Image (cartoon, rainbow, N blue to C red; front, side, top):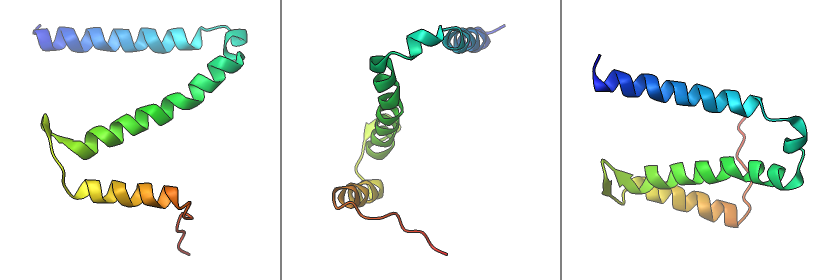
Length: 88
């Protein structure tokens, strides 16, 4: 067994343990308003980080390309509160 497979199995076990522990948390802990605010912001932070990394990097190099134009248009649309286009 190579180090790659050991790392893969170890990572899988850690992911399973984290998911299981998330389901094992008592309900009254999750009803705390502070925890609910934090849980509402986590997906936003993760998606923002993903967009930033995908927009400005490629193969461990910082790059500026056509994706920056798309993100810039999206930011302007958000600032102007433009409606989402729906085609029928």
